[in-house]
Image (cartoon, rainbow, N blue to C red):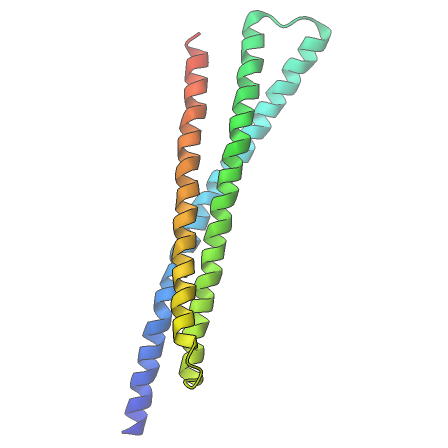
Length: 164
C-alpha cells in the first residue's frame, strides 16, 4: 500500500517536471533555428564588407562610376540594416536562453517541493519560474518576428537596386 502510494507520487512528480522539460526542448529547437539565422546574417555582413573594401580601393585609385557609387551607397545602407538585424537575433537568442534557465528552475522547484513539502513557497515559485520562462519565449518570438521584417526590408533594397 505505501509502496503503491510512493509509486503514484513518483509518477505524478515526473509528470509535473515534464512540462518544463518539454518547454526546454522547444526552446532548444527555437535556438537551433535562430542560431542558423545568426550565422547567415553574419556571413552576409562579411560579404558586404568585403565588397565595400574592394569599392573603397577602387575609389582611392580612381573615381567610382555611377553604378559603383550606387552600389557602395546600397552596401552602406544594407550593412546598417544588417547591424540592427543581428541585434534582434542576439536578443532572440538571449530570451530563448533565459527561458531555458527559467524552465530548469521551475523543474527544480517542482522536484524540490517533493522532497521538501514543508517549504510552502516552492510550488508558487515553480509557477513564477514557468511563467517567466513563457514570457521570455514570447519576448524571443517578438524579436525573431522583428528580425524577419527587417530581413524583408533588406531584400527590398537589393531588388530595387537590381531594377536600376
